[in-house]
Image (cartoon, rainbow, N blue to C red; front, side, top):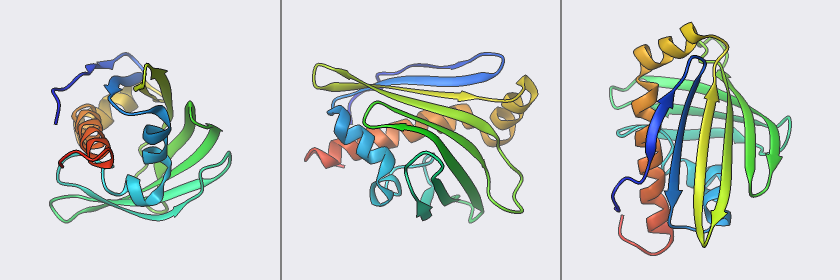
Length: 164
């Protein structure tokens, strides 16, 4: 895997964001985010696996998935897509699935082409500073975001014929 090429995860009052440059074409990176078979191979922090129950990437479509923690705990999640502009932008509302403590935020992911590479920007906008702080404290979401993007980088390297 190549060295981390991130701008540090940024925390502002209501937001958490990260930027990465991936040595992969934008179409490939976008597909990794929207293909249920691919996303399960890299989504989540180190040690986690992800099972997709449903994924319909369109405005109003839903992605229901379970993140399986290394401690055996399951985290049910639900994403509702607000905007899908292939291959440059995804906007979605994230929350917990039924009977689960929700982690609510609006996510925006942009995929910008840069000479055959892709500049990926992930923004998570929370309803309050307290909610953002809770998610960082209870779930380590800032480091989890970094680890998830590291796993995406490994996946893309594998997709392009590199070693995993």
